[in-house]
Length: 495
Image (cartoon, rainbow, N blue to C red; front, side, top):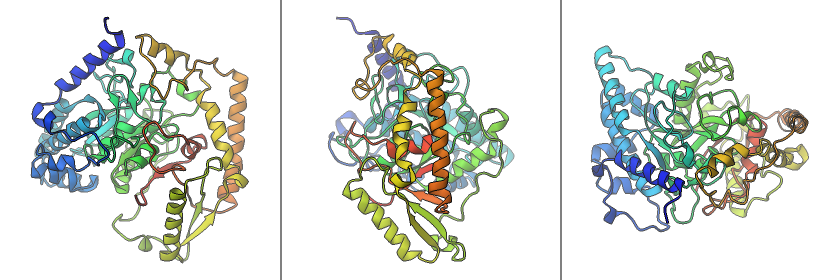
C-alpha cells in the first residue's frame, strides 16, 4: 500500500531537518538515554558533544550578561551561535522541539556580526550575537511555516514577520524555529510532521504544553537564549509553567503579529480571540530585555495594529536587588489574590503553593505589600471562561479543516473530538459576543481593579500541577486574560 500524501511530505521534511544537523553535533543513537520518567535537562552537559567552553556559554549567563560578554569580546558571536546550535540539536534529539533548523544561516549571520564589531567597535544592538528561537508560526523569508499541517510544508515564506526583522535589527541571530501542535489549537504540542514535543523534566509522563511547547522545551534545555511564542488561550504561559521557566503575554497591540502563518484565512484571527506575541525565557530579566528591544523597535511605524506609545515598558530596578529594597513602605504594593477561576476548584498542591507564597509575602514584606483577596464568583471573573470558549469557535474552522484534509492527513487525537466544522457565527451573533465581552471587561475593571485599588493580580496558572501528556483540561485560568486583554506572565514559585 502506497503512503498517503501527508506521510510522503512528513518523510521529506524530516529528511530535510536531519540533513541540516551535523552528525558531530548529535548524541550517538546508542548513547541516547532510556525513554523514561527521568529529567534530561542535564544531558547536554554530560553527553560529551559540548566542550567545557560551550557549556560555560550556554549555562553561565542570562541574556544581558551574555550580550555584554560578546560586546567585550570574551566570546565571539560565532562561538556563541555554535554552542547554542549544538545544544538545540541535542535538545531536539531528546524532546523533538524543533521544526526548521537554521544553523548554517545563523553562522553566516554571526560571522557578519563579529565583523561589524571588529570594524566599528560597536554592537548592532542589545541582542548582538544572541541566538534567539521563534515559534514555527513566525515567517522567515525562504523558510517554511508549516505549523504542523502537512499541506503547508515546502511553501517557504516570502517575507519576514515584523518581529523577526525587529530582533535582527537589534543584533539577534535566529538559529531555529520550534515545534507546535497541528493547527496550534491544542494545549499539547504534537503534529503529524515533526511528532510530539516532550517535557525534558519528565518525557514519558508530563505534558510539554502548547501551543508554544517546542519553544518552552528548547529554552528549558538552554538551546536558546530567549524564545518567541504566541498566546491566545495560554500558549505561552502554559508551556512556560510546565517546563519550569518564565513567560509573558503582553496586552493586545504591544507586539506586532504581522507576518504569522496560522493555517487560517487572512484576518480570521480577529474573528475571535486575537493571539498575542511574547517571550519565553529562563529569567524575568531576560523577558525585560526582550520587551525593551520591542519598545525601542517602534513597530507602530510599520504595523498600524501596534499602539504608538513610547515609554510603555520601563525596566524594573536591578533584578539582583532584594524585593524589599524596591518597595516603599509609604506606598505599599497592593496585590490582589484570586485563588481560582471560579469554575474548577484547584487541587490541594496548587492551593498550598499559593498559600505559601502569600504567607512569605506577608512575613517578609508586611509594611510594603498589602494582599487583598479577590472572590472570582462575586466579582464576575468566573464568567470569563464560558465567554472565551464562544470566541474560540466563532470562525467555524472550515478553511483549517480543508487544509488538513487536503493531503488525507488525520487530526491529532486531542483535536479529533474537539475540532469540528460549524457554520461561522452570524454578524449579529458575533456582535452580541463583543457586547458581552465589553460589558464583562467594564464590570471587572470596577469589581476587581477599582473597588480593590490593586496594582497587580496573582492567580494560579492552572488548578492542577503539571498534568500528563494530553491531560490539560482547565484553560479558563489562562484564556480569561486574553478575553479581557490583561497582560499576564508566569513565574515559578517552587517545584
